[in-house]
Length: 144
Ligand code: RB5
Image (cartoon, rainbow, N blue to C red; front, side):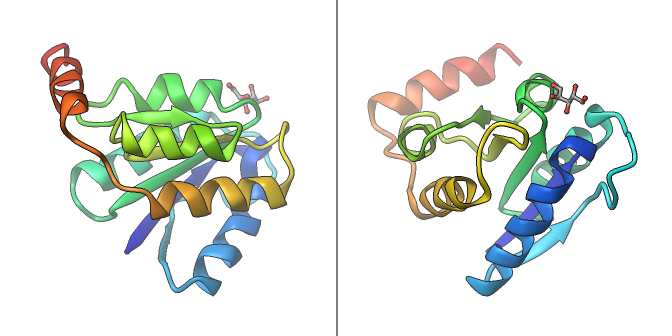
């Protein structure tokens, strides 16, 4: 499974930590930057990762900015993207089970790397339940 990663400067350190974690778990990683702590604009990286999902260059995306809010707003503007800002593993689980989220968004300035790894692990191990949730996701798609 291939995971596209993107962050701004505020998410850079956590992105690097998660890259190592994902590789150690045998995931393939597509690192779309940023590549330092120099200030950048988070929408540029949201777009790159969202396009990777749209163009099937990656199965899932992970986006990180300071709060996770800007990345969520930006990524959810792209057709076909369901980006979920998750602060707890339970949110990540339900984002997959109920919302069929294809991008996990994390707040680099608000959670530890250990908690982020746990959230990522849960997000990547759960599957969409379908059923009653399918028509809800379809209704979201109809708004695009
Ligand atoms: C950057 O300072 C910060 O605004 C950004 O990382 C993010 O939190 C925006 O939502």
